[in-house]
Image 1 (cartoon, rainbow, N blue to C red):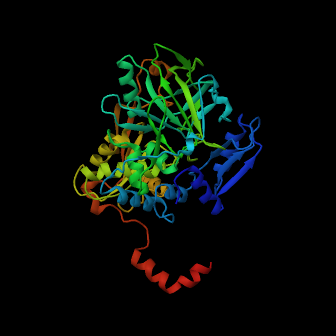
Image 2: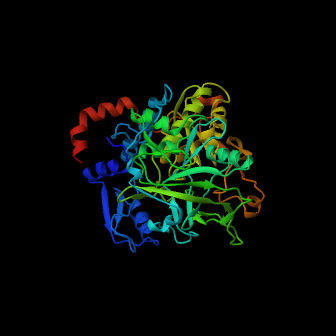
Image 3: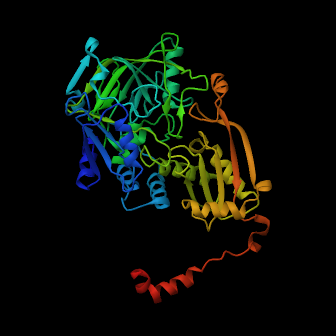
Length: 487
């Protein structure tokens, strides 16, 4: 198995799933090559070297988790599972609860093979890409982790936020409202202090998967990753902030995030996970965001910058995002609602947020289906930027969009089967929120609850489906199987 990004890449190389590319330009070429190859199946992981203007060995890895097989490898699940079976396997793994394994500090940390500080700090030593044509600049952090410590409770949080490069020692990391890292940062600012932070730019993919996973307040991603790996994550202390950083990280930036009253910079636009550029409105103005001043850089010899730039769905950019979100919503719904048969977040609509969530269940009482939709729309995993919550009957596989659309077309009465909930949790990444509303902090949107299932009052009398019975299909398979398999 693997303990760092390099080990993961070595496994992919041995399996013929890694493509190495030499001589690409950091300016748009790496992003466009990634988009082109990520759109094809099978879709290899990519490792760029000898990047234009940079010395050999300063590398970028992209398209790391494009297949469900690779996501299963990162999540330590059987690599042959696909679709709803992957969701079930993840739920089974977390059913008994995450039992954190605390990280352990080591003396010899590869991430400290090179340390630069003070006037020697220069972020341009790394081949930071401009990923998309309309991006407002170069983004050093797309597959990154921002590490913060709560000033009151002292627990450590790892979260993934986009990081824009501004100059040799200045970045910004955009943090959505409501995120744990945002809460911690704001606590420091309310005390009149900058927020100490470390930004990791390449790490064990399992640790990174936990940094984007929805964990309860107080549980560190280090402990969750240790539980998932079956052994502790090795850490070392950053020298100025004393924050724990991964010992096998590729690159780590250490410094402080200052409040807006001290300094702000223009951020974005950036091509985000919903498939649109965000960070600017019809005026063309970019928002001002707080800055992160880099005091030290730690990096390994021949460092690998992890790139997970979002593209228009269904191109994935993270570790089985739809698998993790589907499982989390399934757990939440099942705690409140009986006889849930499956939950699936459609990656065709979004590869991360629950923009289009399908819940399959066996209706047992009046209002059962709508109750399930309400829970899915209100739970933490399903609430953030969710848009549509569709409930289907147990004969519909929620991961098969053809079946879901058939149910929508034949079992949903638009007049009676659709409800709208207004003023719900959204984000600046939402393209439907106008620039004027964003400027006022009105980061809210509506959600639709859609019942695409048989009307419960006459459920048993609903027309039968024109489909061969499982018994008939089994008999045909037994009698004609050899001929069917040869055609």
